[in-house]
Length: 192
Length: 222
Image 1 (tube, rainbow over the protein chains, first blue to last red):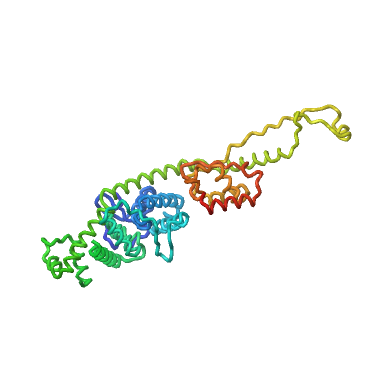
Image 2: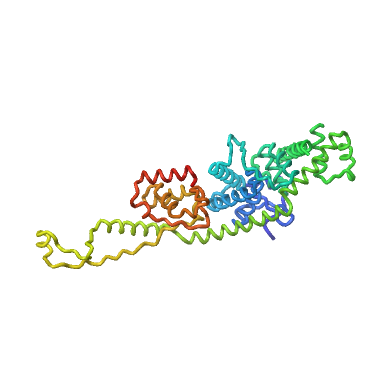
């Protein structure tokens, strides 16, 4: 029998060097040492896609470039990734550093002050009016709230979101997520 | 509207409650116009979030990521088989040989004859043909674009190996492979190209000129 099994949510979170993986309809916790590197890399990258989209202001091409360069760096730093207790957080840091480097190079970023990142690139022209309003509302939220909502929209579980957001308890994450959902709904109620 | 009520509505929605199935939700939603408005907004925003970021599009992205990871790992295996350090060593040796030869004056008729009396005494009057020295051109040093993170970092590594200045390596890589940079931008080397390192490009150039040229390209992104 496969060494993976459905475990309770708190147990999953406490395990070091583990990562949540969707296995058919079941979400399970896997030790990264037991995973083929390819699966680990794919699993982490899928979780980070929403974060990449958030950073690039939903510009898919830019997000995709960011994901590609992150994958390359993760492959180069394979040992560090596999040795990390929090591989998703490690990969997220690489992605963010990549983003800062790339955008500095291309001068597409207006300012990077603390964690507040504004981007000129809109990339929303093709979206319909309603989506533009939703994205406009999303931009009023902070980075963490946006990431949470985008990951929820993509169908990620709270455990996966917790892995990406990092240092936050599950209870706090749920409260934060609900408040973000309320903020978005209220904003869209005003806009639409 | 109280945040507690909004949170309660959210929890009920998450548990799968609808206005038809849950009297509690219905009571909360119908409590005020504001609550009704909030309920509608939450349904719209959640549905839009899901349709914009989730669904078929999300599945396509996931599948694209699987393919990309596979591709990058395969690419890495191929690149890893090629270790360019021995090639660098060979290139250095060959370059030194070429440089040494440029300091040997060989007459145009291909023979060396003693010119002064002293030389005639030493070597005798008879002309002799020099031993033929054949210098084979070395294989050019090639950097794989897949290995190149940035031109700066790659040039630094190679400069260390070759004992050259970083700017000199950047110069030859850029000048010799301009078309392999996106929009001729020195910051954007293409990963799918190979870059030839032709050190002859800097043979007659002053280091300061090279540094200025590279800095100019860095500044103008051209």
